[in-house]
Amino acid sequence: MTKTSARSVLLVIGGGIAAYKTLELIRLLKGRGIGVRAILTRAGEQFVTPLSVAALTGEKVYSDLFSLTDEAEMGHIELSRAADLVVVAPATADLMARMAQGLANDLAATALLATDKPVLIAPAMNVRMWLHPATQRNLARLLADGVRVIGPDEGDMACGEFGPGRMAEPAAIAVAIDEALAPAEGMKLLTGDAPRPLRGRKVLITAGPTREAIDPVRYISNHSSGKQGYALAAAAVALGAEVVLVSGPVSLPIPPGAQMVPVESAAQMMAAVSRELPADIAIFTAAVADWRVAQRADEKIKKGGKAPPTLTLAENPDILKTVATLKSGRPKLVVGFAAETERVVAHAQEKLTRKGADLIIANDVSPEGGVFGGDRNTVHLVSKAGVEDWPNLSKAEVARRLMDRLAGTLAETA
Ligand code: PMT
Image (cartoon, rainbow, N blue to C red; front, side):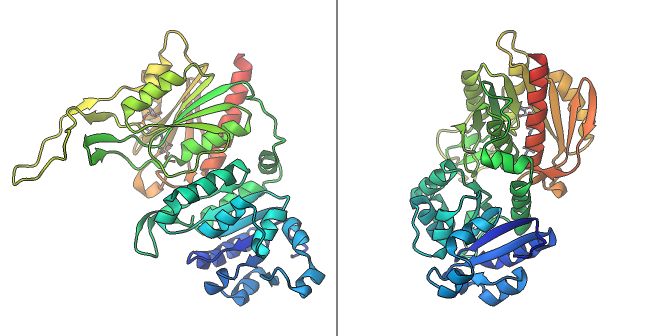
């Protein structure tokens, strides 16, 4: 490992088509001054060569558990502990299963079992394999074991199918690695010795889209991925809060330590939020459909040569406004988000007053900004005190800063 690298990762490259993206990840990490040493699994060698990995890392590439040369140079135990973070990319279904089981049947699995460092995995596999109950069980086990997960993304896959399973983009993985390696905040969160200003407090968060049924097979929805809301839940857990995440349909792992209540429609989200009150802080990140179809058809609407049907819409309950204007049992802090495509701050100021929130986080969701579904966000904090503009940050960083801020405000008002 380059002696000058203040931060270093051990990169385990699994055997999946996404392994080629890992070469770009190495380049990005090196560009950030992060030292990279790699373990290439036997399956991984089918997709990238040891030579290309060695050329990019500038380091010997490890693959054999029983290589006497490797053991003489650096044993597998030391290999697993010399880095600050272990990253598995791509994390195949097989590697995840072996990690979840605690197997040590090759160098990668042994290093992962022997490490005393935080582990971040970037899953990549066929959509059916990802959604299979066995993989989801393994994922839940790994999350419970404290493993961090980035992705997978949803999209067209090499196998021709569509859905969640694509490895997160190298740039997004690099940001996650940066955050995990951040000396102060990041490592404290990972090792669990961070201050816990929200211990004993309940934080209620809504996230993701809602789906409003047209008939049993069709619905109205939007592009929310849930990433911002889930990041807030993770940040609130890290500060010691009891976290309830009322979530519309998304394909994200539940942040370890948070309780997730799954819902589909705005009406279900309203009911779940009401059930979960009282709370100290309520944050409304969900992109709730403002309208539902007034008369949901019980059977699939047929074309049958007739004129296209006309959908009559009815207004959904405004969950944020309902909670913010509660006469009794109102959370001490009520925070809304404002998704705007023009006059972002002006519309957010209007929502602050109309909905009765303490704080509105305004963000521009114009398609070219990539906020819906993306990993980064540029937010403006709008309150009665004024407007505070934050720089473009990862959603995880927005979440951490926001939760820190809310924890501080709550402490002041207590
Ligand atoms: O999920 P991601 O892909 O990470 O994207 C994040 C995000 C863009 C969804 C998020 O940052 C965001 O802006 N969330 C709010 C989306 C929204 O519905 O905004 P709005 O301006 O339409 O609503 C204002 C506020 O009222 C929001 O807090 C919303 O949750 C709430 N609301 C809206 C309608 C309704 N019926 N009930 C509500 O509670």
